[in-house]
Amino acid sequence: MTTIFVKLLANAVALSAAVWLVNDITLGEPGESTGGKAVTLLIVALIFGVVNIIVKPIVKFFALPLLIVTLGLFTLVINALMLLLTDWLSGDKFEVEGFGSAVLGGLIISIVSWAVNLILDRD
Image (cartoon, rainbow, N blue to C red; front, side):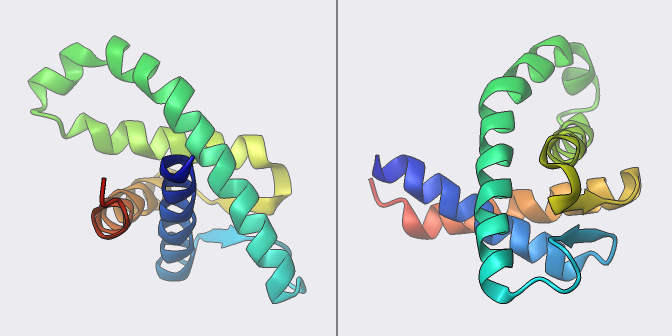
């Protein structure tokens, strides 16, 4: 149970960092309150976590030859696709404008999520 909470928290922190650093990634409505944005962030983090648990391994399996040829750099493209899928699933609550923003956001999310998991996951 705590592992799920830690991963949800890491996803939320990583998504908020991406929203903060990349101008073309937005969260919530423009006039929404801070509490509303926090709830939206947790919902989007949950959607992103489910996408990463269910869809990402399937995509990585089918992209295995490309991952081998590019020495793993194709993972950036897969992360961008997972971020765009999260955008599509979350509707108007989370917006990613363009593939370049998705690649940059996926890179930021990967780094921040790794760091937060390193700090919080003491098991």
